[in-house]
Length: 109
Image (tube, rainbow, N blue to C red):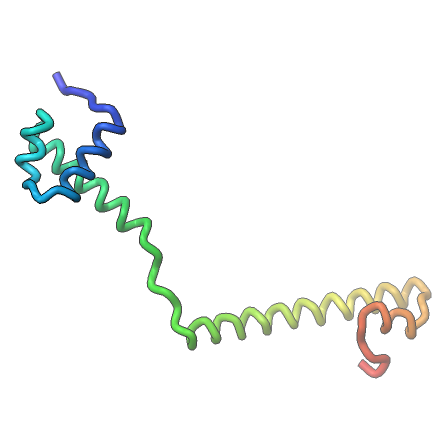
């Protein structure tokens, strides 16, 4: 029958393996755990730790290109919204001078 170990026990056993100068087999023997069981816990810990590492950071050039593309899209969205707001405000009979002041654009465009 398989023995169930508490999560805290497993974590401490893995830390013992990683931090001690003893071999994995010696730590397993000292704890009364099967060597392959402990090896599996260590492998799982290392895989989870690897997944937590941040991805390769963007270079400044890549980040700059990405931000420029994002800025271009945001400017297009802003311009569309300004034009739509001006159209609907003018259709409602608001004065062009007030519409331009609210949208912070000049009357000439």
